[in-house]
Structure formats: structure tokens, C-alpha cells
Length: 170
Image (cartoon, rainbow, N blue to C red; front, side, top):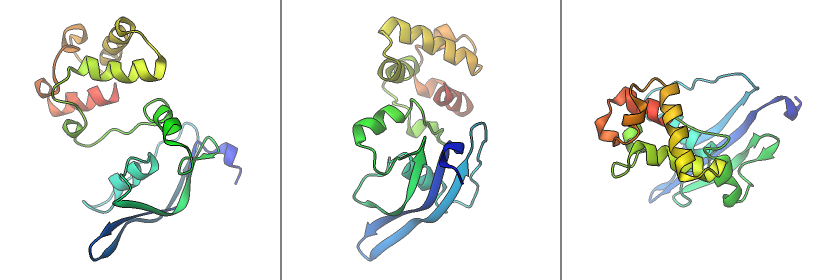
């Protein structure tokens, strides 16, 4: 298979957690490819490793206790498991993202949603504070948040669960 044809290619990914009794094989030999324009849905029972797989791909599992035990994660023909952390910060949120099932665990309750969206825009797109705020409002409008210009100043607890997921998508 030509790697250039795939947007993401995960091959034999293994991530284990070190525990007192040994190792827990949270992700053990996961492989899949995603071509440009394709979507992938990952389904399974609670605790089967769906979230840990996604977090492993984005290298968001702390090491320790996590330990990459094998495999590769090729994104645009580079192995994300070998990319320096500074480069991964640019890739995360800028080119690869993840929408968590429970956005309340990812949104900071002490910051407005506009500031949180704007932070990523300032880092990845090098926007000024005013530009980031305008873009955050536009993004909230795109995901269907009513009265986005006002809601951009709201805190996560002021949104319903579904609306918080929309904020994460924005």
C-alpha cells in the first residue's frame, strides 16, 4: 500500500499501562487506515480501549504510567510516535483533533468558551486576541450555537451537554 494515499495509518499500535501487578495491555495490536475524505467510527463496550486508542494516536497518554510497546502512527508519512513533543503540539488541534464524549472533562470551568476556543486559534493560526474572538464567534455560529456573539462569553456549565460538544467541535 502506498503510504502517500493514506491520511492516517495506524499499524500494530500497542500501549500498555504499568501497574503494581505488571502491565495492562490497553491497546494491543490496533491497525487501521484512513484515506482523505474518509471517516472512521470506533465502537465497543465501555472500557474496551476506544478512548485510549485515540489518546495514544495523539500521544496524550502520560509516560509513565503509559508505555508505547510497539507499532506506528503514520500521519502525512511521518510517524507521530517519533515526532518531538514541540512538533506534536503544532499537529494536535491544528491538524488532528478529538471530540471527547464528555466535553466537561476537557473544558476549563474557570474560562469562557470564547477564551478556550481563542487560545487554540492564537497558538495554531497566530491570530491576535481580537481576531481570535471574532473567529471563535464565527465557529460557534457554524456549529449552531444560538446568539454566538453573547454565548462566546459564557462558561461551560452554562451550556447543555450537547451544546458543550458543539463548543468542542468549534
